Image (cartoon, rainbow, N blue to C red; front, side, top):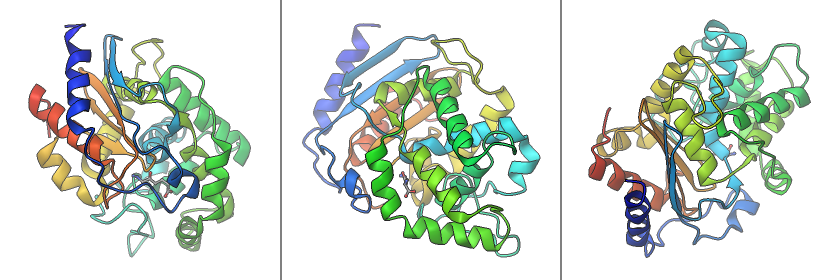
Length: 307
Ligand code: DON
């Protein structure tokens, strides 16, 4: 088994390599400068075994894949009720950067879209933390999921901050509804810093495997979050993680998942495996083109469809 999986992964990567469709994330200039040819895939099993092929140790920014993990931290740090009072759990059926707020309460529909994730960032750590300490809590928490100390890519962070008008508009709407209670610029700054955390495909697979392993990192043995938190996070990934492609994903892949605009894509299967792929060209939903194809193949080949 240990020697067969890397061969399988190498073959799967070879089969998608020629697909150069899709675009880099042009709205963040620093991401538009990424090497579009990068390609990697990693399987992290809940027993700690890791198998990979291709660019599995290349660093890139986590982007929206930070959202389920920061949601887990907020649920752990504040409890379910305060978080659910501010952010719902319903699929929006809209793109990740739509406003998508409930008309009566102003709550963002779910934590996977930007409106929900900006709010969730503001709920990480204890209420007493200042914005710098809150970012530190998020980076420390993401690091615990990955099992190593992660850092922020300052260039990507600065690049996105210069063009953050849409996220700022969303945050101002959230502030107008008192969903955010702080300066919208502070919340967006922290959220963008969270998105600029550097990871590798190996890190992402381990983070996904920590979710698959009931919140315990399979390598370090650390219980990063409790089981009820993991259940909540996986449910929201299953229904909302792929935004306006969530239905297609559920039927064609059927694994709780999350994507990021730097080209990362993760899936987590409880009790089994964390999967990560990395390939920067994106489809119109903001998902890695080759990543989606790889997940479709993995799901079909190994019977991973659970949703
Ligand atoms: O807020 C943004 O637009 C980016 N920092 C993250 C978006 C993202 O990764 C969407 N997912 N595929």
